[in-house]
Image (tube, rainbow, N blue to C red):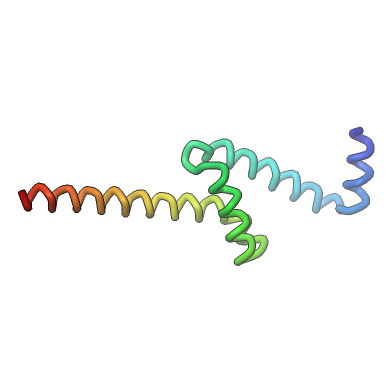
Length: 93
């Protein structure tokens, strides 16, 4: 089975491409594993598809950091708006 994969990989990829592909897969799994508690896996897949569709390879490369940034901004905005609305209601009473 491993020989079949090696033959397929050699047919479609050169050696530098295989190294880059392997590093990207390794880093991708590490990032998904480390950031799994921050973002849901579905959000990661959607962000890779969205940013990859917009900006190609660079979008795929920066998809998870951008999704984390968007997630943090949205959570901060929601927490701030909830805090402001809570103080307004207390002042009205």
